[in-house]
Amino acid sequence: MKKQDQNIKIVAGNSNMRLATDIASYLKIPLTECNVRRFADMEVFVEILENVRGEDVFVIQSTSYPANDHLMELLILIDALKRSSARRITAVIPYYGYARQDRRTSGRTPISAKLVANLITNAGADRVLTIDLHAGQIQGFFDIPTDNLSAAPVIVTNIKDTLDVEKITVVSPDVGGVVRARLIAERIGGAPLAIVDKRRDKPGQSEVMNIIGDVNGRSCILVDDIVDSGGTLCNAASKLLKSGAKEVSAYITHGVLSGEAVERINSSDLKNLVVSDTIFNETVGNGSKKIKIISVAKLLGDAIMRTSNEESVSSLFI
Image (cartoon, rainbow, N blue to C red; front, top):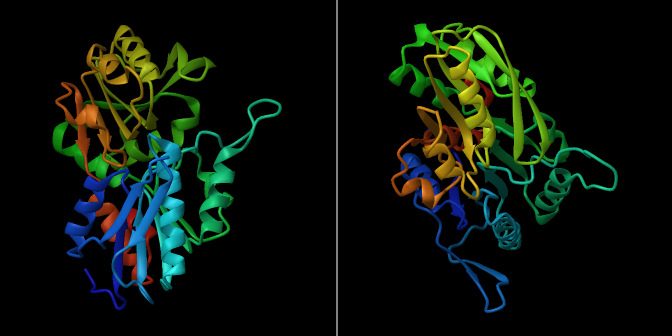
């Protein structure tokens, strides 16, 4: 790894301190000391405790649960760094909350993903680094350079290390995820592809209608960007097994896992669920039987170093 020409500072909010620490450890750069706390009325207060004047600063903060609190932390961290004369501020947002509100689904509704992009830009960020946006076009919501990394290299490595790729069929849980599923299928050696035909009556609830593709006798892996309630995955796993699949696992980038999702996954027909650590979820960390965690710390660390060195980030995925 080429040594950076400019000094790098890594600042972390409270959303995922474990991932931030792992990234800093990989880069052999200590986390910049800062104080991110709440006043009695829950207002966010930030104080940067080191000199950052003229530095290339990377702020690591997922806007995960509680989304509004962590979003405000990010905005105020950026503002504090801007007012402290940081040379460049990159918002490293492993999980970009509000991404599912990327369009108007009915009358008189917002496009919140665009609003959040405006807030981050106006707070003073110079660029954004994120992983597996729910919709790729969200990159265009930002008026600053935005790199949307793919977790595919990390996922593919885990699949090859733990499964027999000759017996795998990659499954997209909906039509919209076919491009993502095909990418994984190609990277593990051209595995067959199947698609779940589902109907979503309202957010968090879906009904699996059909399985498009031959899954009989195959080990199926469902691939998606977000698992929230877990209902879609569990329903899809049951349908795949009824359609003749030998076993079903799932690889998801962002484990939102809200409400009773962990319990739902543990009692489902899924063999296991593999999620990345873009979101810190204490419930998952406390011994879930089926949920495994893989790290994107090296991926983000390499991207941070390449960004600082003005090198290609997209070459990480070729």
